[in-house]
Length: 323
Image (cartoon, rainbow, N blue to C red; front, side):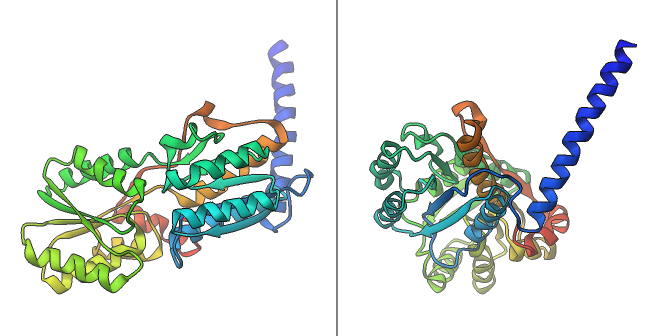
């Protein structure tokens, strides 16, 4: 009898909770807030350059969570560390209720994050700078461990029998990019060389990779550190007459198509949509209930190795801008 009573009680709670969850989901799907908390303002300030599709996906997740959580969402970006810090200061001056920032250039961001903390604005770091997040006073970090992601790439290159690879760094001074190549070198049994290119100049990217492949015919793998650079690397290999396999960090619709066609070997995905969504949602949870995932440790969103077969499944998601 006791079991029956407990079962009925749990079923009742489950049914009620499930109904409420469905109601919240329905509201969010229609672009309406699923909560009745105050209209807080959260700002995200990143190190993105113009036209970077990766950050479009991050924003897609953040905006979805903001609509659900009754949040006014602001976004600013600049590839220069000092200008990114100025954007953060502008958000502090607007007295936002929460901040989401990247730490690709942590030295430029340290002081302004301290100012946000002094002003009583909770901060979450996202995507880059996990090793500095706690030190700078952020609540948590959401993203992938870049060294671990790099190690996953190196292991994948080993499985594919690659012997000599080049890691293409497209942004000078980005610690996350250095860590990715460091991770590849750590686990890759072959030889790895770093190639620095001017990421804001795609013709330069192509010519630099092409020249590298022409000068060293033993290179059998090219690793790019961002999805927009993968198709350019493919063109460079074709122009150089190289049979080197091109692999990449990050995923978008073009990368998914190239994976399916065989032009790319694999991609390592860190789920940018989840980074944006969880950052906003966790700030809302913190403001509402002082909740915080991770216990002070980073909340990992990757890495996930995506191959030709995986790309078929994810293709529709990439086209709608959520993967």
